[in-house]
Image 1 (cartoon, helix red, strand yellow):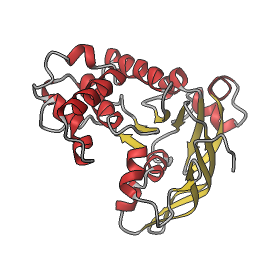
Image 2 (cartoon, rainbow, N blue to C red):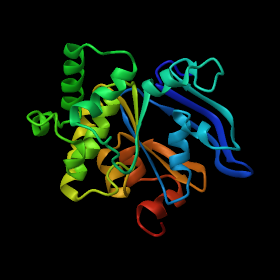
Image 3 (tube, rainbow, N blue to C red):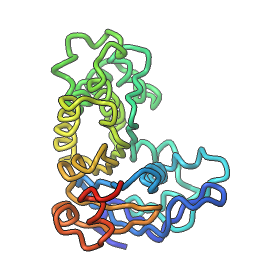
Image 4 (cartoon, one colour):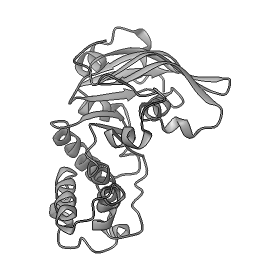
Amino acid sequence: MSQESKMVIKDFSFFYDSVQALQNITLNIQPKEIFTVFGPARSGKTTLLKSLNRLTDLVFGAHHTGTIHLDQTDIYDPKVDLTHLRKRIGMVFDLPTPLPMSIFDNIAYGPKLSGINRRKWLNEIVEKALRSGVLWEEVKDRLHTSALRLSGGQQQRLCIARVLALEPEVLLLDEPCSGLDPISTASIEETLFRLKKDYTIILVPHNIQQASRVADRAGFFLNGELIEEGPAYQIFTKPRNKRTEEYVTGRFG
């Protein structure tokens, strides 16, 4: 197993009962890169993301073969503490889901559950997370107003900041810009560029243009298979596989 890789996926297949959603995926994710997982609908992208922090455990009848390692830890080892794993690998979904409470309490919620209650510490955590989510300057004077009053793009950055408050190592993002306007989308993308200095980011992009804008490396998925992966410039300008070329040039999908 590569010493340098942050996550190593090896011969990983995933099944919903008898339906196979992923087929023998082998993929190395490097530290502090943006890796985009792209392809048409029902190609296995979200299943892969949810497998990376075991959200798929919640699906009755689901099972897998193969392995996924985070650093040197097999994340499916029965001894793994799921709460700890999901702190290390945080996930942001396509629709922003702020809690019906203040901006401050949204960010402080996770740290409080972890036993951090001193106001001074919480203040520091909230400010750091909101700065990392590139939201601090917009909300610092209204931290105690409802998070539900934020715009869609602000709510999505709040959700990113809420995950960052738990100090993860890996960020999973499933189409975080799918419901956002172009200006909000640009804000999220700018946030991702800043975050990759400190975090490993695995992103299912909103569309192929976003994949090509933000990725360091990318993987093309089709019908549960990883067809091709490599540096973004190569995947999007000189794909080696004909199916990748047909998808990135818009001939299908």
